[in-house]
Amino acid sequence: MSEAFEQNLQEKGPRPGGPFIIQLLFRDPVPAPDKEDMTEVLTRRCGAVERFCYDEKTAGFAALDHVGAYKDGKVPAQLMITACHPFDGRDFDPFLKSQMWDCMDDRERILRECRYQVVATDMLAAALPALERAELDMNFLAALAELYPACEAFYFPSCGKLFLAGEVRECQIPGPDRFIRFGVNARFFRVQDTEDMMVDTVGMSTLFLPDLQYHFRGMEPDWVVNHAYSLASYILQNDTPIESDETVDGIVAGEMSRQVQWKCQYEEALIQPPREVLDIHMGEYAAGLR
Image 1 (cartoon, helix red, strand yellow):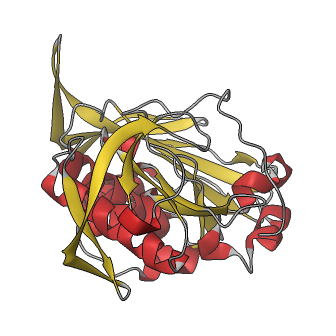
Image 2 (cartoon, rainbow, N blue to C red; image 1 turned 180 degrees about the vertical axis):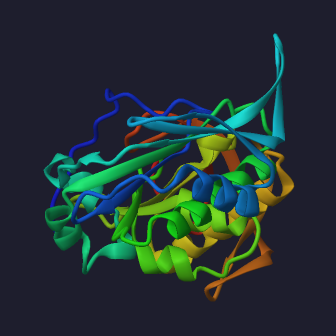
């Protein structure tokens, strides 16, 4: 964490409700699984599917149990999987790599040794309720982990998390908290030449839910990271964003406690990518101006 980064709010931010993208990383090229195997595994993991394409470039499946309403009618979400193609880990800048907390010891090796990738994404899923989409995306992830046993690691561009494949395959977290685990990243920064610290989340906007921001000093940052994940989980579980001027339970001795209430308000993010976030004013621990 000794490297200094510049604030850059000019770069393009994530599009709320955009596709949830999963990059499967490999050392060597891999063939596409058999189309019947794909259909069987996706059906078992994600419910009824209908294959609408399978060629040398892409396999596509309609998730028939997950239908969203659009202006032109109801359309099932689609699960798309590309063929294997080259991957260059040198494209990851130090800023992105600094927040790969789940893979710190292996990130450089993975990005150096994995030269190939398969890209999977949901499409036409933005109209699904947040909980339903989160569940579908995580079931899709489980199917991919089963279909591609040679996969070394998974990268999630919407939040910047990198995981060894074993962590994905062995994950026993139930329900929507799996999405929080793999699809939401609580990042940590120190503000140069001050005692101020920042924790924020990236990834919630995929579900049209708010990301969080904490600007603080004088508190153990791991406590704040845990609070961010717990609050993100609460927001997803209830699928109801917290409004400005509402309060949330704060932290006492490392645990969330009703004894302390922290006020919330929507603000522009202090750290890239540019987006609106739910800022948590941490009372006596708050830093900066609101």
